[in-house]
Image 1 (cartoon, rainbow, N blue to C red):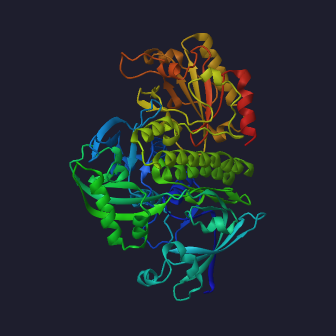
Image 2: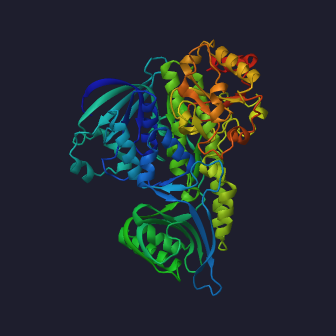
Image 3: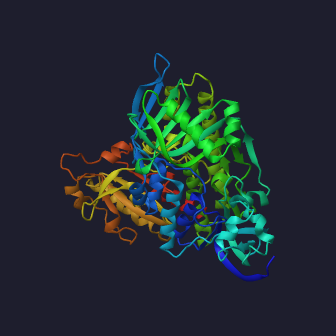
Length: 601
């Protein structure tokens, strides 16, 4: 081992620069946290292949300022189609066409596909704007936890930044096992000691960080094998721009996913053990040829010619979840390091990014001194049940796909039955950070623990249209949305003004809460319904109107949709990750509820 060259410190050290690690870095940098990201791959080497982005994940990207790039380069998929065997069993016939995400609560009623490498590129570009760059190729060779220190993680890092890339690429060490190269002086440039307050292992299913912490994966390996191929289709298939689920009498189960620039991905469940063995042992060219033939056969009577294959492999399904998500309160794991499952649920990148979104704001609050370290326990309490639910959903999918009599309609029905989970829109947290017992009935259209839903409103100052999700964003602060009701009634306006003034007396309010008020009045009458406060917690930029630009639109539609009484109103506290923490009446005698919540962080 070469001598140690230097020692450095950092708030958060992220191990792994796939979509999960990069997304974690982006979340933390948006919150002003100092991070470093290390990656064992040489720049340009392939990582994961997860490429399906669900509705809630698009919302998360929006909150970080990168959603437009996702839509610019991704393939937006609105439609799902199914195909059954035809009567002669010589090919397939169309069975149904439905909206992919038929949910009124979805801001985006679509799924988006984009190659993992392009997902990484977008995030890398965003990180470079704040001078955060992935350090690669490098690996951790030693990990010690010093829990009582200010910087409790001491890591010895092998830096490969100055390596001769050709020598490293020609070495015997594959990209997933570069830590074994740590003792090879020929390959190592220098060694550095990094002292980090927190370390996050986003280093995939073979996670070195997880192994060093003694965390085990629990679950099963169902024994199912899939073939997958990325290619450019030359076809007359009628729904080549829709997600298509196919039961072919000639090729079995096929899942067709459109991708950007006229490309596609196809999954096929392999049942022939002889074929599976041949694919596993054969060359890449042989594997591509055999899978291409399956594709061509499976789409009959339509033509489907496979060209420009960019990726082709087989994989066995594993359904496992980590026994725990943290170690010593300062080491965490996220993404595939926590959970592995099939691609059929379309959840790989989505669940992983949701891990990052949940953990990052909590780490930021602890590092900033806004919350005690105990808040970090809620990461596992909230995220691990989601992983277990995902595994159960994945098992249901495999149960449908396994029989020879697989019916694409059954898969589509299960998909839509579980759509709130699939899209991430129905994810409901339950932990000490969620207060469900308070006043759910005064805002019955919004579920405590779930993400706050989108709603169109206008800004009081200039009537500019806004969406509630854009108001919430992803910042350090909690958001208090006060649905004031009909403030043109003098008694209601007085109550709201007194409530807002009382909020300003909460010791920590200005530090960690940002308030927005939504008036349930006509925009033309909003001046008489503005609750002028004597303090400084409310500005004109944080007041909105529950009305639309068009004169024919009725005011108060959001109050009605959320089932809020215009006389009673409702105050809702939204966490930095967009999930509803608590609901309570906007009156002076209930302000103590918010004060109690903030004091327990």
